[in-house]
Length: 478
Picture 1 (spheres, rainbow, N blue to C red):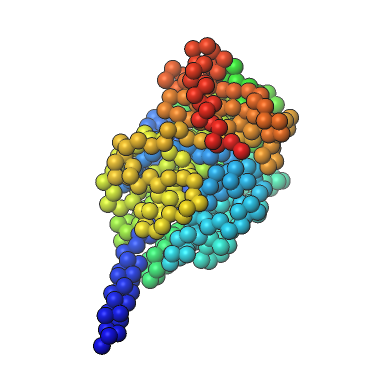
Picture 2: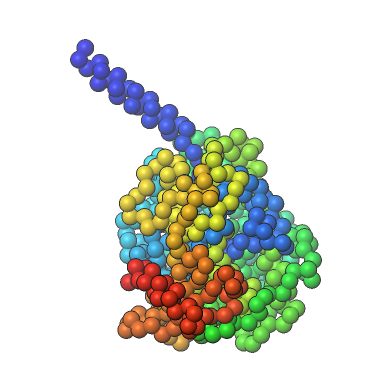
C-alpha cells in the first residue's frame, strides 16, 4: 500500500509527459538562399510574392533582422548552432563548425534529442563540401543537400551542353517547376509532410530552397509575371562616397558567369536582365512555399505547426555599385524573417525591433516548450511574438573578413570588418588581425542617408557618435 502513492505519481508524470508530447508543435523551417526582403510583405513595390505574404499574415514579420555574416555557409552555420562566427571559427565556405566546437548541439539536433523526427531537404547547412553535412542533426539522411548535376540547375539544352557549374547567368525555360531542383525539393517536402503527419512523434522539417541564388534560372511563367522595363535600375548605382576599398571589394561571384564581363561596368541591358531574373526567382520560390503551406492546410497541420522562413543573407543587385553579397552593407546583411507560431498574440503584425538570425534557435526552442541551451548567443523573440511593438536589441552584429589583396579570404582573413547596426547608424571598423590596428572605419546615418551612399566617419559632427559606437563594438571582437 505504501507504494501506491509513488506508483500513482509516476503514472501521472508519464501521462502528463505523453500529453505534452502529443501537443508539441511541429516545425516547418524554410531557408531561402540569397533572399533579401524583396517581398510584398516587406513593401517591395515590384515583387509578386502572394504565398510568403500569406505566411506573413499568419505570423510576425521582423522588418529589421540581420545575419551575422553575409555569406552562405558562415551565416547558416552560425544560425543553426546559435553561436557567432567567431565562436564556431567559421568565416569561409570550406570550414565545418565541428572542427572548433565538436560537441555543439545544432537547432535540429536539439529538437531530435527532445523526441522530434528531424528531416533535411535541400540546402540547409550549405550547398556543397563538408559544411553541407551534419549527420547528428537529422533522424534520416539529408536529401538534395549537395547538388552538382547540371540538369538540376539548367533546363535549356544549350546550357546543359556547356561546361562547369557556371554557364548562363539567367535562364527562362518553358518547363514545369520540378524541372529545377527547388521544384523537386518542394515535391519531396510535400510528400514527406504526408508521411510525417501519420507518425506518432512531432517533426522538424527543414526545407532549403536555392533560388534566388545565381544563376537566375526559373520557369518562364515566373519571368512573364514582370515587365522588365518596369523594374527600376539600381539606385544608388555608385560605390558610397568615402567608402574604403575593403568595403566595396567584389566577391567575384557574378563575374564568374561567361555572359558577364570579368572587368568593368555591366551594360544596362544586362543589369535589367539580371534584376528581372532575380525577381522571377523570388516568385518561383514563393510558389514552392505556397505548395508547402497548402499541404499543411490539407493535412490539418497548420494549427499545430510553427513555421519560420528566413533568408541566409541579403543581396545587392547593382545598388552601391555592388552585386551579390560578401560585404557589411545593409543590403547584404538585412534578411527577411517571418515567424508564425500558432496562437501568438502578435500574429498578423510586424516588428521593427533590431534582431539577429542568432535569435531563431532560442525562439523556436522556447515556442515549442524546449529548454534553451546555455551556450546559445542569441535571445528568444517570443516576447516579440506576443507584442511586436516591444523593444529588441540595442544593436545587431555582423562581420566580413578580407584577404589583404585577393578577392576572397580564407578563415578570418588578414583584415576583419566588424559592423554594428543601431536604430540610426551602421558602423563598420576594419582591423588587422595580426597587429590589431584599425585601418578604416565607416559610418552611415540612416536617418539622413538610408541608402548608405556617403561614409560620414570623418565628419566632425559625428565624432561623439563614433566614440560611442567604438565602445559598443569592443565586446564583439576577439
